[in-house]
Amino acid sequence: MKSFNTKFLAFMLAASVVCIPNASIAEGIDDFVVQKVYDAAMSGDTETALSMVTDDIFFTVLPAPGHPIWEGAPYLTGKKAVGAWWEFLAKDNSRLQIVELTVDGARASFLFEFYGGFFNKLGIEPAMSDGVALLRDGKVYGMMLSFTPETIAAIEEARN
Image 1 (cartoon, rainbow, N blue to C red):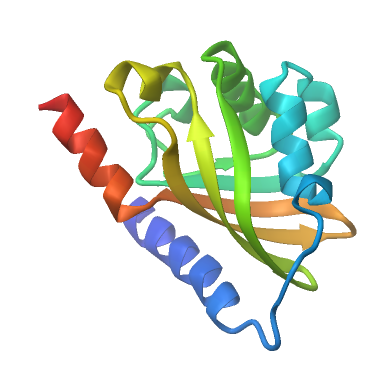
Image 2 (image 1 turned 120 degrees about the horizontal axis):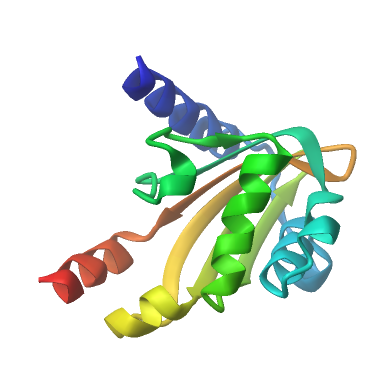
């Protein structure tokens, strides 16, 4: 059942980006709510980061991390779970920098560079990733992040 839910969630998030009509490039990446959320969270200000997301936020990384915070789930839901993950990443000296952004209304897709101790130890910086965010009332409602195929290959090679 969890496998179906993960595949369905990934499909719906991907479809929401593919179906964006007349998407345009946002002019201010630094002012984009996802960048602001990660700037706050990775600096250790989880409270400010969580003020920019909805109470019922859902968040996934594909493939899902095998970290204990995830408890084997394919996604995190709610501020408490997402905040715990961001606190872990902040302790790993992580940061996210969006380098390409397409926004249309309540949907956004972005390419970002991800840095952190884990990737530094593997010799992979930046770890390039794609992201999709769903927005509601100016806050992040849902987010899916996925490493690019090149980054996945680099991780696999570094682990071998």
